[in-house]
Length: 98
Image (cartoon, rainbow, N blue to C red; front, side, top):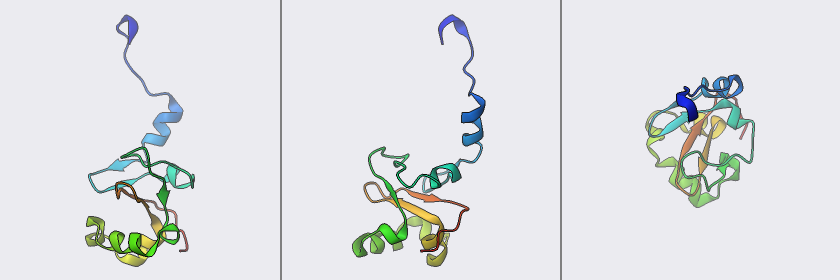
């Protein structure tokens, strides 16, 4: 930053960031789950879709993603969203009755 100042997150952004836990496969981002039109944080192009929004071929791909080893299918259907462009998988604590 100009003048050698330090970079500090504004309080609102800090509040959103504290809910994010990331690894290569899954990200917990509860504020994003409240926005049905949210963009994929990995590719920035795709829209995150719930199980009910995916087509049959997309659902078959989702069944084979790495997170299937960590979560059972019923939990993934209820709490996860996917980007059909890059296959990023998002997890939320909120329950979506699919």
